[in-house]
Image 1 (cartoon, chains in turn purple, yellow):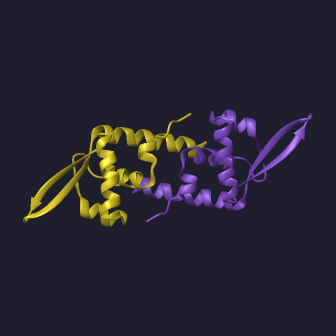
Image 2 (tube, chains in turn blue, green):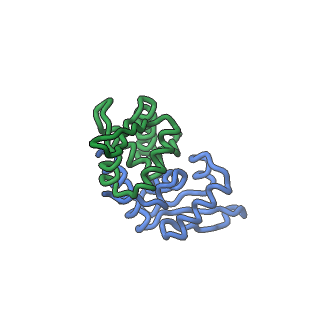
Image 3 (cartoon, rainbow over the protein chains, first blue to last red):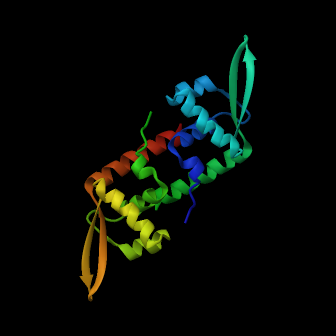
Length: 96
Length: 96
């Protein structure tokens, strides 16, 4: 039976990963944009980003733009691979 | 944004609901068959069936067959509806 990836399966993280994987390879997204897109609070998004970062699924780069701090998020190759496997497992379960 | 049903989204419950919804309308499945199909223990399957039963998503009927206790499980109409909504929400998220 197909194995679901419980780290990715969690609803907020599934949305985050889905949003990131939809970007072109190598493209990054701003924290504030992602927060608005997903309708999350800073704290909630931050917590889930950290879990995904710790798993090696994304990177967070902090920078100053016009003297304001910004965080840019980018999916990694393992993140892309494990997300694809998770979606395949979901399809297998839902199609059965 | 599409809302995931967190009760159904949990991995074991997602598998249970997917297995039940695949049956013909009104058809039922035996506890032991479902346990083997999903590779679960009695306790784990029992716990998740109870949660889904309490939500009105399935019924459990106990009967004696050849003097042995059997439990038959059947998805309800609300269970079928909410599962369909959940799958639609998943598709929206994964397709986005």
